[in-house]
Length: 278
Image (cartoon, rainbow, N blue to C red):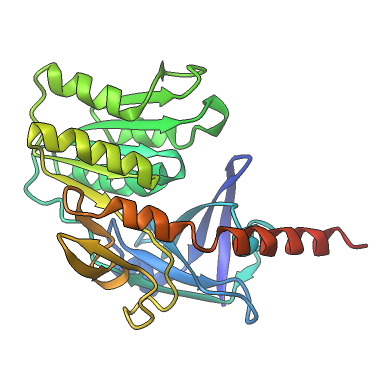
């Protein structure tokens, strides 16, 4: 059992938790993930490691309430326990040697972008961070990003905070201003990463994206997280989650990501109805 030592609601649908998991915290690196079960009857879900503290032995997860399991997880409080918490899994992000990087985060994907930006900043790289949200109310980790970057650009769809527009508009503006990036790292919705990759390909800038498809066992055996990258089949859990954004077949990934949406919706509705029963 893994104790929840801290819980923080970041916005109406996004929750941060620090979990006591010393063995995982000891080895975790940015870009890796864990797989958890809320209880013995629960499903296994992957969540990217948002941060870790080796001294305190804690691992931070940030998740959006989108289905039955994340709803159940959000209902737990500090001092309660998670049944299973396995990791670190996946290949850590390769950031050594980079001198100037643009890190792009979209929505809750910004939680995954944060540890990458933090490590780059700690290694002495120049880090420009661009994060995008639908509106001000959904903004997360602003102060954390300020501390982990040289410049922070916040974009909102409705202009309620920061600048109005898409992250791609902010990135192209920076490129046209003469900023030469060793690499662009984009993490967020598939559509966002697709268009970031299309933009950077025009300018010949290496781009890494973090792929988080449906995943079950985290070892590559179930095949649920398969992707096509550079014309070859890859598995996000063991080959990724980071991939060359210019080689990912985003259209295939977007199609596969929608396969279980109706099932997830019905499972969430069933869980919420059960919780209302007195």
